[in-house]
Image (tube, rainbow, N blue to C red):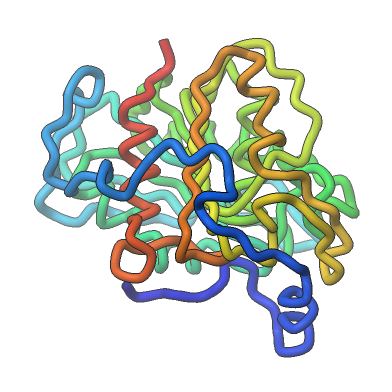
Length: 295
């Protein structure tokens, strides 16, 4: 896999602080583990049901970077949109949110979602956080400190994407890593009438969740994650105390949505790959989103 680094990027001393957060977990000590690596199937798996409105695409599509009306400290925020060539409409949309201290190009590289979009026939959008951050609730700075309205920002992102392709409104899903995962979960809480499903990596829900209707949620989390500990805990560098990941998902359960937490024993704060961790996070996320249209 091209990229194999922690989702939250920090320099020497900062990483030492992050590593100091105590957390040693095994798959047996984390509950619940509901999906096994063996259930992740190859890209060429036959699609069924609602997914049959899209087909595999042989040629790469087009990628454009578009401005939004949102700015941070005078800098305009953008969204990268990838539309497969020969896409059958209306098409599913996946919105992918990068981790803290990153830009869209990072998640584009390590997730390889554009290649999968070309094969499976969906549109993918990569919005830009404010100075590499999302206001997902209690994390992360500067967006959380400055109380940016990233829910409104993502509303605009969806409007912009619809100018580039005909989107199936019943198949708008979000993914993301770390702070991006947290933001995806927050958006699902506040926009359950828009979001069909969420499939994220290494991030709990850390915002109030006034959820009135079910949204299916898949969370993949490393048992060895010391940045955002599976069982919760204080991250001194970020100045945030994270809740236990499983407990944080309770609002989605109360709304009668399907919730799955997959604990990956060999992973830390990583975007998992089959080669290194036994699970392909990108493929697992897509299969979840593909199979959970809004009804």
